[in-house]
Image (cartoon, rainbow, N blue to C red):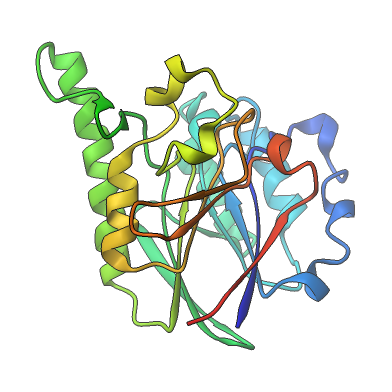
Length: 237
């Protein structure tokens, strides 16, 4: 058995420097790995990225992250990722990492993901070029997640995204914005891979627990939903 801690949407800035790290004192007792599900900054600036790197560096467990839409706001996402990696944090975007944990080897496949909506009520790649581009970006993200899973050879696997793969965990958000909160294509990638868990953020007013159509547990780990420093989830083969 492997225990995963996860949180997203911490939205750190200079005023938060040092304040989140003090909430992680029990991390080594609670989990084998910490997953960060995007929106780690408020406005996606390099300065905020440094705060994120400092808050999560040197922790007693491996830290694996994806970025979120807020982290792209200032077009500094590459620099933010570079700053985090320099502090030993693994940042994924269409790739994967294998981790040796006390309970076995854990594979984490990660991608930011994108909106589009869910089966029966989603955007289609038709019409204006802007709409085609919107849907194509979502399809590309899901395909990168699918390929990331293929690169793993581990006993247990987790999908780490910012956008949601299911609408279950969006309950509480206005239904009108569901197409901007996730995509069913991410769930298809998760189910195809036979993942053991999927975690995401983004939906601040959503619900913590859901399932993919294939029965994979999905957890919305956005901080406003959790109301605690991180969620803790146990997975086993």
